[in-house]
Image (cartoon, rainbow, N blue to C red; front, top):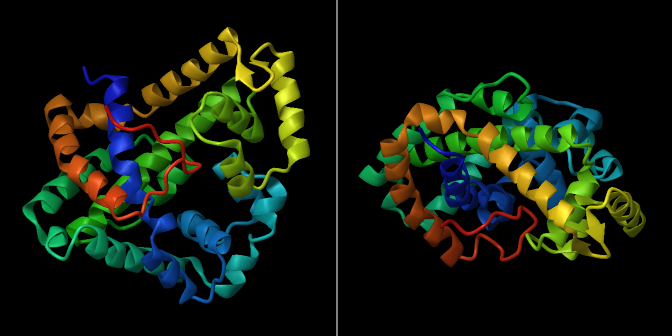
Length: 287
């Protein structure tokens, strides 16, 4: 049986390619051409567009770990500037240009891209949608005909599927969005400075969450206690387990082949500087 470690490995390999949307200059340029100015307006519009022109409450709920006021400062104003269909077109145009720069003009039409697209499309088609709003919204979009864009769209569906499961693992344990960040920083997965700046929480909210977690016996100062470490490990284990179904549908042999295909793609994105070090996503290096 395909193991949860496979889900984690493939997420680590594929996430930088998906995240071109957020970090590549070409993607920022494409979204600015819709009239949306500023990184966060583009981010919220591009990530939420599959849901339709939803309000701040829906975005806050589905993204889970952003401060509500931070979201409300951009949503629903973004839909007054650009409709979701225009945003969806812009994000594909941006990814197309970013991939051609980071991986070269040959890779999008290569046999490797076509094979990766076939495998990832099959995995994304096996996503279990109930309780997974962001995964379901992305799964409902057409799969692009171009292999390199099919790779991106499928990886996006799969990572949102994983994220929906991660939110469920946090919610089950009563861990808030800001509390999840406090634990991530204490675990050394990413820095507090990144998280405060990139998720909109202020120092008071962070301190309150840290005090609550300390009261539960999970933090001692800025360090995880033994119990806190066990909780973080349990959340990650549940996240991997809940992300497993699409990879089980693909099977071990095809998952291993997909990992072979994604490894050089990840290296190329990182080498191009399109995956900032210690970014707030907190993805581990693949084994």
